[in-house]
Length: 283
Ligand code: CAA
Image (cartoon, protein in one colour):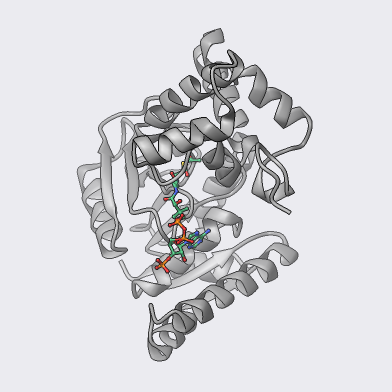
């Protein structure tokens, strides 16, 4: 495994790609949208400069990592050389299935096709390929250049060899694999997160404390790096909403629906940092 192709250059795809390049993999980040490709490349080259300025990477290490990564709209050529593909495109099943069908056609037989989806198990796309044993979830966390765990979720066809290979890649990225033996909605980390978030939303909705103070409690009483409301703003309230909506669609259980306060923010277009306003103002 030396060559990684990341599909999608959004907040997750670009950072997964850069993490791979820094770790020594030859990496391509591909997006259908030329504007998104340029924005991702500018952001990530700026990140490399920032690492050098902060003394976290030497100028040589940054130049090497920068030389190992490219950002492009091309698919066929990078797919033909990929050992591992990490799909981080939009969370829409029909889009992902079309991507996996194309990847199955364009990548070498040995290539592993992984999805970064947090809501769809890879079984939802594995049957769009002729290699379901080499398909799994590799679920990174935001910001992917910083967060060290990656959930490796098998579907019923994923082979032991695939699990072992992607776990080795995750370790080579300097991260810790979390192996899930089967697909469950929310996987592990988002279920833990949801439990905290639900309590936080209920406490705020009941008027027990302000959302700012609930964040203070999470940070300064429990040692969380961020409070649950700050974290929703970082990850995106739209993402939180869509994850719960997808969970409800899978389970049919009204308890899985997004909290009404999250729905209200979602409908108001207040998604957090990405729109300048969520729970907090980010101007
Ligand atoms: N991109 C890249 N690097 C970043 C970053 C970003 N967006 N934000 C912070 N960093 C880096 C900084 O450069 C800094 O690196 P160095 O120490 O090496 O210089 C380091 O992270 C710490 O940053 P700061 O000092 O600026 O701020 P901080 O100490 O408050 O950390 C944080 C920021 C890393 C985001 C931290 O608050 C944190 O860990 N928050 C929790 C994040 C979390 O829970 N993520 C999971 C979300 S759930 C998810 O992603 C799953 C899903 O399916 C949606």
